[in-house]
Amino acid sequence: MEHQSKHRKVAYIINEPENEQELNLDDKNLSALPEEIGGQKNLKSLSLYKNHLTELPASIWQLTNLEVLNVADNKFSSLPEEIGNLTNLRMLDLGHNDLIELPQSLGKLRSLKFLYASNNHLTSVPASLENLQELIYLNITDNQLSSLPENIGKLTRLIELRLYNNQLETLPSAIGELINLRELHVMNNQLTSIPESIGKLKHLKKLMLQANAIESLPDSLEGATDLTDLNLRYNKLTNFPETIGALKNLRFLDLRANHLSSLPSSMSNLKSLEKLDLRWNRFESAPDWFLSLEERGCIIYT
Image (cartoon, rainbow, N blue to C red; front, side):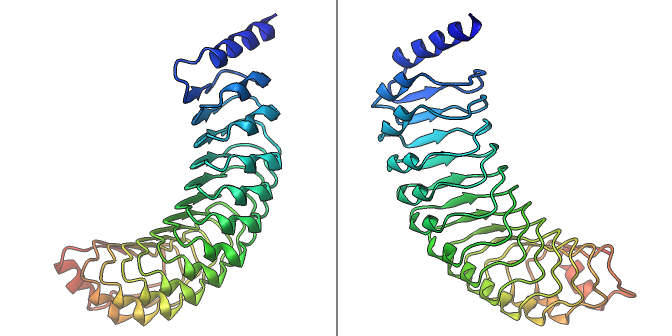
């Protein structure tokens, strides 16, 4: 009886919406949706966040005017290829489900700007994502990715890429083709190095690499001249490139818990540096140029 009552209530909300373009069914304890939902042809935004859904009615894939679809925090283990019918989607949130793969048809969503697929069980991403030429934000954190396809470099409008809490051992050299990237978050993976192409990211501001196994950085990093935040704590660095001194906009540099015993004198040229954290390394004494940084107002923790 309770299930039938809930179903009738949801059917009423669907058939008598307060707003013909927006339907919010967040946190309604739903385990299923009625087929009638496909009748709302004018819907532009559908949110089903935080329910108990394991599948969606086939009629949903007829809602071709949808621009926003949020199915995060449900119990989906798969999604049908018909999701590719929703070609007007601008935002798709698939996070916090039980997905083991993403449909190839996601590549048909050529208007997509925001894609969230965090906290699933993904081991790879479909090659078809290269078609998402409008994408500016991609979040695939908290999955089981061990690699990324080279064609990720085709996403040239990407501004923010979040990949932390995976099992990535390398980053493809094509990462350097993401010419509009501002933020790259790859902490808590299994990286041992960073590709030379990182230096092509002229607009990169935040590079978050903490909790990996990185042993050295490429000299080419000097090319990332807009960089303001560089986090490398909990890695295995034994040296630091002399070219670091070229990063004139760097404000925060975290090198905690590495294997460093010395630093390049070029770091005295980091005129914008506000905080340098060197704790838990192997320094025996502080270099003379620390004083010039501190005189400019930089806080140094050793």
